[in-house]
Amino acid sequence: MSLSSVRRVAVIGAGPAGAIAVDALAQEKMFDLIRVFERREGPGGCWIGDSKKPAPLSNFSSLADRSADPALSIPDRLPAQTPPSGQPRFVESSVYPYLETNVHDLPMQFSQEPIPDERSPASISLHGPDTPFRHWHVMRRYVKGLLDRNGYGDLVSYNTTVENVEKIGDEWKVTLRKSGSTSDYWWAEYFDAVVVASGHYWVPYIPAIEGLEAFEKLRPGSVLHSKHFRGRDGFKGKRVVVVGASVSAADIAVDLAHGKTASLPVHAITIGHAANGYFGDEAFNHPSIQRHPSIARVEGRTVHLADGKSIPNVDNIIFGTGYSWTLPFLPQVEIRNNRVPNLYQHVVWQQDPTLLFVGAVGAGLTFKIFEWQAVLAARLLAGRATLPPVEEMARWEADRIQARGDGVKFTLVFPDFEDYFDEVRKLAGEGEKGAGRRLPKFQREWFRAFMDGHDLRKSMWKRLNAQAGAERGEGEGGGAKAKL
Image 1 (tube, rainbow, N blue to C red):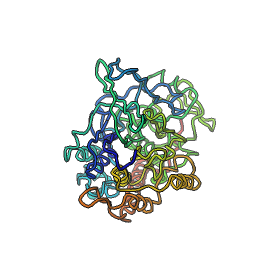
Image 2: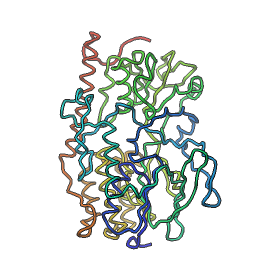
Image 3: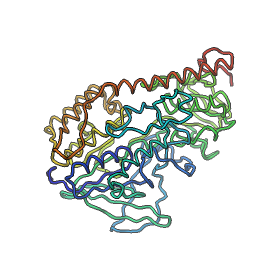
Image 4: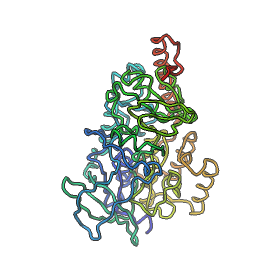
């Protein structure tokens, strides 16, 4: 099918990437049908909160080998009704009551829609009256506002999971499932193009550790991923081990240590693991955090470490170890080394440009990157932008693999934000007069504010560490020296 003949477009996901994709598509004024499918009950993506406690984790081997989100069996004939599926789909939220953004609002927001100037008392107390961080409630309302305007909300089918997407002739058959209390309803719809904006921070990755599942079975709910953390108060008096050297593990370890809810010290598995490239490891210098090397095995409630030492009487192990990319609804699209290969500029599936992705990148200026990608996708589907030959697209990916490797680092735009934004903007072009969303030129103050926000966070941790050290008479922290 020619891109210029696309009239029906499906968008998967109603989070930030899906919301901006809908706006970009609608503003092209070229499509007869835009349908959005969101498996949660409303818009917001990872900024939606949960009222229910997350279910205990299970099947740790599949979480470790990244196979934990297999496709469901599709009924032979559609439409159909089936009993509700009991298979975990990892739709639960990753927010907790007092969660705030950790990126400066200027580089985070879309270019034409400023994030509301609402600052929480907690953020002001930590970063001052001009704090650039926002409570998660603000972010959810922000995404919802994008979908509520111009009647876009009418385009969305909520509580609807995309279970399969396959190309049949010139059409994409999208198989859908709406969950009910007593049954699931299945049906199919057909489109000329599909935009995948479903995110990739859903399925937790937990490394394989001998004895971990037995530890969880001993007391269900004792092993958590950071996405299941619901605040410090659930760990009062608990001996906690936090696994991971990046920002989620840092936030949780500091929250438990500085909030003095968990039994101190909080044990952090960081030694021998690379710190987050943006935030560093200052958080783990808190005097009530004790650093350790990797876990060798777990026996009963004892966590044995790679250096031969051990932590006894552990109540909870919390993993801040990232997520696994999964696309169970796209069996023809490969996942390799926790990334999606064959995406030109992280957007266009090279085998068929009527399948496009918004958000298939790592962290950094994410909302703005979503916007640039969404405009490129919309322009291509409207026939108002052109792609280079397939050979050139393949060469772009090969060159990037050579420079970045064939893994997660491939998806990181940092530090080449300006080059990437300019290239995507050039590919998208200006569009038609009176139609389409306009992309401004990249502004270097976005990158500067992005880095300034990280410095604010690191300064906060340093202050908290110094304060805690002074209270204990230990100077500026440096990690707990308490013996077990």
